[in-house]
Length: 94
Image (cartoon, rainbow, N blue to C red; front, side, top):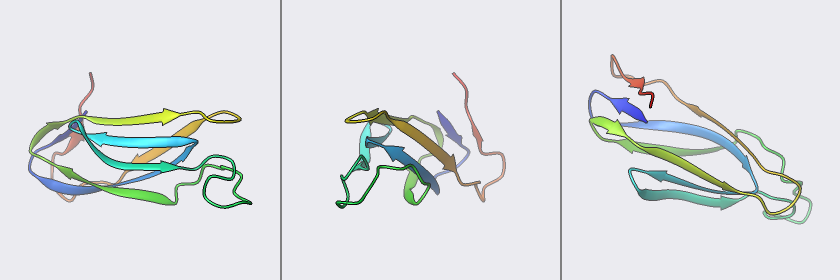
């Protein structure tokens, strides 16, 4: 859960292997493949934080779901939410 005091756009940097779909408040925002040879023939499916999506947060609680699927050789996920320009915005725990 991400709590925002007001509606705002926040950047989420991420890396993953093998398949990923990102949902915000039940709606898909991103889907991609980064497994072995998925993007180009010499792609090893290594995780880097080179991908990003902009999250259109609404005021209040926002549910962020990152669904990862493994295709070959294991899976992984890393993500970092950029800080907000708005005061008092924080991650809400469950």
